[in-house]
Image (cartoon, rainbow, N blue to C red; front, side, top):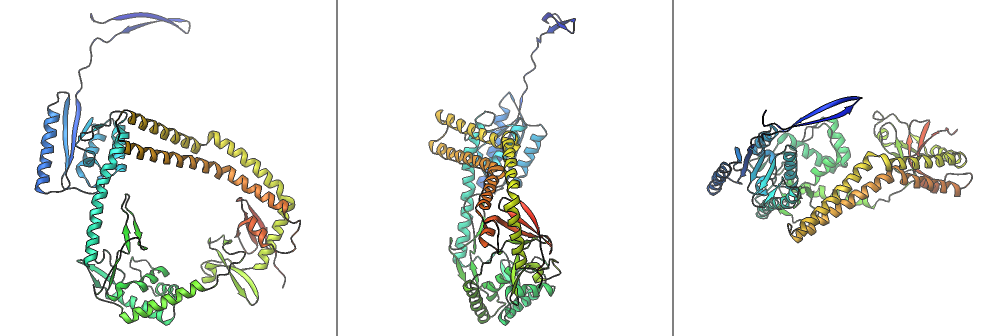
Length: 533
């Protein structure tokens, strides 16, 4: 202990004199080597690519072994793997697992495009690795995630890697387009009545009979809903094995040209940007019609009759005058959540749950005469006019109190404030990178615009949150008070105008009680008084 430096000191603690001796360290710990790994990937198994792959392995082995401060853990490599997701790369996942086990301190990668194919995946992996204390160095872009500005630059350059994948996806779309133009591409999925075998549609006899029945029933006068109900009642399963048929599925079969042996291509298309989405082609893309591509189930003459009848019925529905009644889409069944519809019995209108009207076993809610609903509203209005103002005024005071508390203590608002602060900090960091010349001006503008838009959205979200819990309901309640103040003292008959201004919806709890939901969300019950006939 001859080389140990001792410092003597003392202090008072609880009326006792405590002596403290500090023994300073004289030996420094041995320098710990950094555990370094490398990740390499090529896009195909062609001979040239494999040579490049072998060269990457040799390069990283020599690089890591040649650094006295580094200890090589492993060379992780995926051969012949392509795509936009890291989930299918076995060695990439093995590398992440070793990082989670604490075996790696640093990872070397040739470029971002070798590490990830989209920005989201890249940042998720890097953030996890940073949380594990593992840094990643991208040689081509000179990005080191161990540095403070690393993640920001990663987001910028990862967008280029994503562009590479978008280019690959564009090549795939081009390939499909050319095959469609030549008539070689027919379909990726067989419709009901067919099976797909080696890229060719083959008739499935058991389903083909059902398709023919659908066409016959439609020509006999049934509509799509009636045919769907018939199929369900007959116990015929859908293509996915479900017992219930929908009218839309029947309509699709009736209008599908594949049942006459033809194929209209590119009914749907894939978007050109990530994430890729499938959308219905309403004319945004070219379509191709190819005849006699596979065996037909329906005779062409029958198919054309069905198309003509389908168009005639659709035109009749479009041209049919639409009557809007005071309670249309206003009355809701409390039991099943279905809207009520208006019907006439003799000369007396009444409102009935749509599900009950279709099948009384599905919903037990009984019909209600229209006059009884109108009389219930008249009574509700009078109660609000003479007794409800104090309730609404108290509601406004309570909402204002709640809003003030939310502004100070709400976790949602605090989180949004944090997001606003973080986005502002990122914007400042981006400006600093621009001043240091570390970022291209075009990329700087694009990233600044994106951050500005995100900041605007978060601020709007905060504003909407505050309005949803306070100001919006308060203003609606004030409007209700104004309507009641200016309204008549009594209603001698039903007023459609006042009903529309005051009421959001009417919930039918039973045949004896309604709930009127006001425009501000407040619900008030009202008994139904049966009219003596």
